Length: 212
Image (cartoon, rainbow, N blue to C red; front, side, top):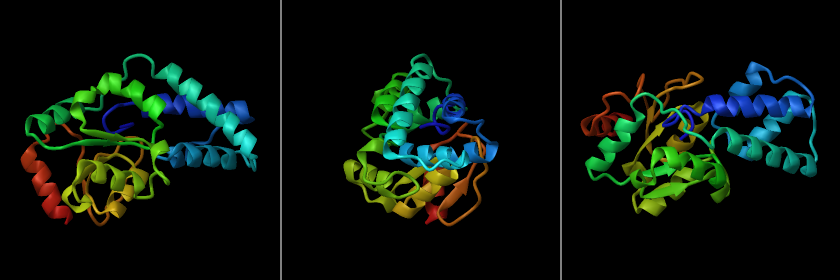
């Protein structure tokens, strides 16, 4: 979702950098890049580690609540789309393909994003706080495939980050990678593309064939 369909990583960037200042210091670019695609608990730990702080559970909980409030504020309005994403969703739906939204973002924030995306494009949605482990673990994609009633190896996942790509590949999916904020290295099951502009059903079949 973030960075793949919506250009929302820039909003996350504002929230995470402001949180770092709240916790005691400026966030480095290296720390920010490590956060991209991370599940909320991992993101908080990375943020504290970047500041050299060993947090208590109470500090983690308080930081999580602060971040969620700020992200909700930032995402309460319209969120820009990534190039070609709106058309790609419409193409998938018009072709009659089953589709699921699989994100590390919490349900409360995902619901705000769905107001921009449109719930009609997704048969199922899986959020980071609804699985035992978030990305880069395969759990979110395994759950998404289970809800769709499709084996992961019959799915094409669309991702933008190293974290998300690793999760989808570990689940057994073919992975179409359209990098957003950080580069993604080539790897097994991954097919890289510059954007979603002009994506077709034939492209999806070819990506699945090549990535197998």
